[in-house]
Length: 561
Ligand code: ATP
Ligand code: MG
Image (cartoon, rainbow, N blue to C red):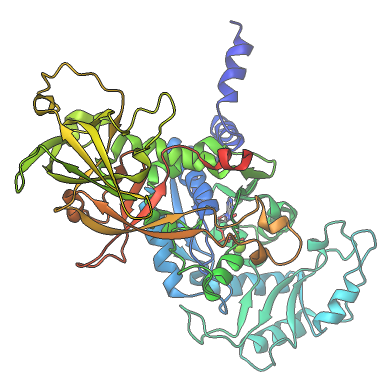
């Protein structure tokens, strides 16, 4: 292998952000320091798209011995709230990351105000009395240059005076703005004298009523990065046009040269990702809160039983690209299933019970059967006991009166193994007046108990079951796609028109008694059914379980029907 081949395979395994960092490290930039930040706006709960950004920002910092700040981008007092701050911190830690510092853009309001004064003093910012309509008219179009505002040539003294008075609350909301003096003919519309500050008499969740002027995103983000000496400021592609302004502010203020890099947003099929849309689903009660298990939020996924390991693996597999990404939700489900298979405790739960009477088993007798908690992890998870008695439940679908060939479950005269218990033979199907099978009479083979089977009988089918007397009735919430279409945001009309009306189905099922001790952290595989976890709606008299994901991808099959 030649040197160049070695290099190119190495580079291929790095994403483009890592390549940039490695080049910077080789060039000795920032003394080899890597500091990233994750900058959520506290106006909603984090979703799987944010997880992508978190994994990337924290991931590269970890990889190169650096650190990551958590910075709340709280420059818009109207939509932000402390409830969101707490949920965001909780979600980042749950995903498995710890920030070096917790900062708030609002911590920098004094400094940002000073920066604004500096720009005014340099003749690079002015107070504009135009209304927003006037400003829009003067802005021009992408193909036509804009026109200078009549207030653009105000003197530095006048600007300083007016801006101070804006800060002091002397002017009405919306009556004046502070704008950068850049270039009304710039091909980049954002460089046509962007607004830096606006007047807003709003209470801020941290600074209270101290301020009635608030900086715009473009006058807060880059400077906040710079104040923290962020080396690599990673954001999503819609910020590409903002980069020129980001650099302009930093250059003209002569502050630490943070640099912005952009990657594509992550989108997932059959859901929506914007916080604004998710907030609508919550407020209009299409879902039961931000942590509804159908939501693409991290709190929803956690409640549904997704693991941080699975989400991190998914983000890794989704990759870091510059092309827009609509990732199939089945990739996420694959990652969840793959991880749960390794860690989930096996339990038996019958969803659609058919009573079986073992006619040759003594009445009133109960014996215990040992069953493995997780055959994938024999050392760590051990076994549990399950009661076996004369009356048990099996699934309705595990019996057929006239079975086709190769049906290895129960049918008249046919034998199956009850998982971890005995082999039974179906002797008779008992029917009601309408001819419906309501009960099976079976007999068990005495010397066929699992672990101690000397019967020499080989059966092909193994069924899950529960003992009737000890069975625990549980509520099971089964979830389907939240939307009926792959990309609700790109459809015509209101995205809510595409909600899947059957995204939640509630059923009662019968569980083996060990499930009564489940905790919220436990992960279960209900054998032959899927992965489940206890829901926080559970009470002492009612256990509620969520179906996290099925055992196999059944969606594709449905779609092809
Ligand atoms: P939304 O549009 O959902 O409200 P946002 O971009 O306004 O998202 P922020 O709180 O500003 O949400 O995002 C914090 C960080 O997470 C930003 O750096 C943003 O670029 C990133 N981010 C948000 N959504 C995604 C996504 N779908 N994929 C990747 N990164 C994302
Ligand atoms: Mg945002």
